[in-house]
Length: 376
Image (cartoon, rainbow, N blue to C red; front, side, top):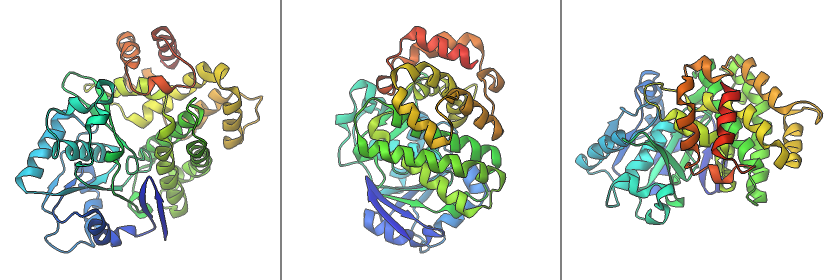
């Protein structure tokens, strides 16, 4: 078993959930609320993840997490947390349950509304060490939220905002590749491309952090090799393990910051009526953002060429478009139901996203309009 202590402690192993009692003890959690979603429960993954816990350990289960976690969802889970006198959380699932659990961890111990703690409103310093402890158990390999300091929440006003703080990093991440074996091919592809986009954007960000850059490029190399295998054969345990590593490496690189792919995918994902998958959006937007960024980061993109095994003379953006298509993913926004009339509003919203500032190349609202049109 690999026991990794970088940002947080990661337990990486087939069957790692069997040591969950030790993780609860290390986090000081005795009365956990489990945060998950209906899909995780229906797939039998909740039972598998909690099998090692003594009967009666879990105080309550909140399984109403929406596909894109919302302010209302956080408040509903908070009510359950308080009603059962919980003292910590176990988040089981993809990025949505983990992000929602982080929102609960704030409101369970801090005053005010959740929006008070949004990064774009200066909320990061307001999140303190009082935050309720969380253990994260991913059942997908994409967001890396199990080691991330952020939580993306869609608020009632329609904005999708980031809550960012080192105090939101889960106390333990239990990364058990066996929990991802049943993930369907398209969901494997979409979540995997989320990890890919994290690695590319973090590596090419202008923020100087050599350690995070090295982790990002390693995550990219792993994901490019393993993702096609995991999509074609979901029972490939080695490929599943490699993708789980790539996912948390992408999130370990967040200290360098993300970029325009996420600045655009966040407002698109906030459109409740469309119910767009975050990883799919990232896959669609990545090629156009690479073309826009290339003049400002040629040396870094040359290293990305190497990571994916592409000669530097070849078109990297086109390669990523073909790579996504080979996984069965759409390559245009129009293919996933995005109406053209929302493009101006999305471009405006991207300017206010916390990831906008760390893009490889400074972008204007007009630049975002062109990127969206190219991706349409």
